[in-house]
Image (cartoon, rainbow, N blue to C red; front, side, top):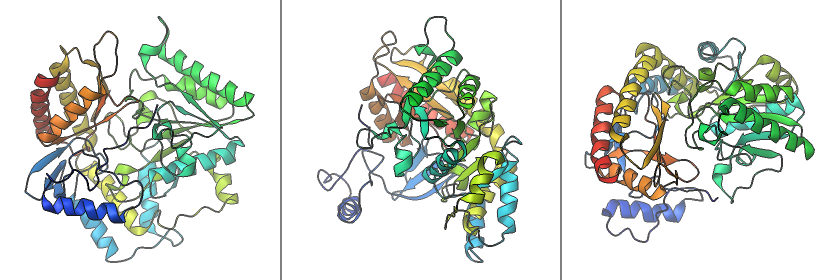
Length: 442
């Protein structure tokens, strides 16, 4: 299966756009290198923002129910002020003593189980997962990696080798084995999801060993986002982790997309399964859009690596990055973010279930909090994916200035993943707009 890329827009076929956008697109095509694509079929230039709202040059307000990178809100004043103060004073790297760096590490680690007590700070989620795998290989002496069948963990050469969502243009490593997503519909009649996932991990380990690869790690996005968003039932992860540990491997929880209370009921997605990872990676919302990511370790996993391997990230953990990340934690404490996510997420889910309960084209709504996937199918019996209807829904919402995206191997799962700044008013607007589109397409 080939990768699904955002729509490509070049200098052809843009005559219907405003002159300014036409000029930007032409100049952009002339000067930018590979990998620069628009996320929307019709490009919009945003000039300001607040909360979960993006404002275009004409003053139109778009509701952002897709981009959770500015988790506590676009242009959040507390974060902006913290970054502004810091850049006006000093911006040192981690080779200099920084009390704010230590204080931030202490605060962040306090949100984790006590077993996870060491923090490293790269800049991006890709770098975080790259470091996590590097440490896992060093600690275990293994090379084998297990990931889910449509996972995305990043874009460095190493991490791309176990990110099958990138498609055939980015080949998997020979040391990588893929397992299915935790979709309970794939279990044999009467079988448990826990047993299904455990057996897949066991088979992957056996196959790796048969080909001469000792297991280094199982890495899993805690929301299985690119696989289609699979979050329930909780509790199936422990059997998978037990298999990994029995083979001498580590469990890496990728929280880059699902972390920072996106589910509301916990700060981290893995906590919902009552399992403790060996390594946790995070990014995106960590700095509210400022480039900072994190890797949290069990000390017995990371300490020897730190003593024997020279690892330094020039821009990771600098004073400004730490100021942004610390301000994000302030907002979580000051605005009762988790409680707000639980309350607004419940309203959002209930509203979507009501609007789609009679639709023959909606197979399931999965997720929780402000992290939901709506699976669009041709009919509920065959469950044949319908990516075209899915894309039509996205376009109809966008035309009404509500932004969402899609996910899953077939691109048929609506991804509703707003920042945790989403308010009750935002939920009401979203559901009102979705109701109009659902009446036409669902």
